[in-house]
Image: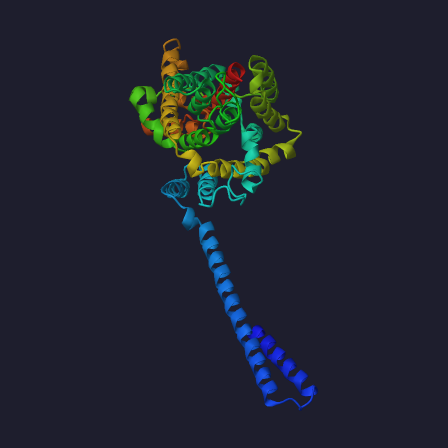
Length: 450
């Protein structure tokens, strides 16, 4: 405004000087004309300044309106607040009760990040499903099935198969616990899910988050075309959240089922200590396991190949540095990225659907059936075993793949029945067998449905 007035004043001075240098011979009429012209210029300057002020106010108003339009407050819906509350609840469970904090904290934060409201289709490149966004690039590792094999590599480098090698028959408990996968597969079909979607939902019963993500990224990825020409639903987010949620809730879900299906006398069964396992056996087991599972189910090779490779790094004794990296830094980094992106994939407009609710219900039933299947099969095995070789049915619940939480639950329930009854080492056998079993089951389903 000051600049406009200054320019107008300069123009007036210039006009005045021009008339002075023309001489003072002009009459009063000329002077009146000069005054009129000067007044006209001043009026013109004032009019221009008013128009600029109005334009500035209009631009400022539009800017403020656009700023408000882009804020989360203007785009928030009830669904966003529901999902943010879910994310906060996950963080609460992790911190307050220490339920799988290494998983639930990244997932909880990811849910919050994925559900911060923003204007959709505005080219902001913020959402996890928007191509070009940082979260979308990170999420590629989930949709392409890259992260699960890396998790299995670290898991293999951490796992001790000694208890399974010393008592191979306990592997059958890990196989029996996979009953939940196929039972839920049938249940999902009955509810109207397509075959690939039902298979992806069923794998939740294995309580193995990486396997659930891997299978759903191949079968229920929102890309594959069904025989009728329709596209499968993108169920990666709901399936992953359900799988990891039930993994975290193992100490809550399993004990009531274990107590319901066993008597106190059965829970007090003491098992013989596992025999010592030689280094040669520890090295041969992952090699034989890799070849056997790969020939039975080649499609499970990305998971079981990396699992047994990680175990070879651990047991060989000559690759300690690689084994240490795999079971510490690498698996920690992948867990952070995987948890964050899986959580962010629960974007309210994609996640809050009737299908998601059905997946959570089926997942819970699947996990319960898997637990019950392991416990009941242990009781069946006891019918054919001598008294000294009896199996405590509690370790059958460890046949699900939630390593090592299911084994810990079996240990705690055994101690409640008899404070001197330690079942942890025995329970680890079906626990690691469950990891192998769920990966093989996923491979079988993939071979039939891809």
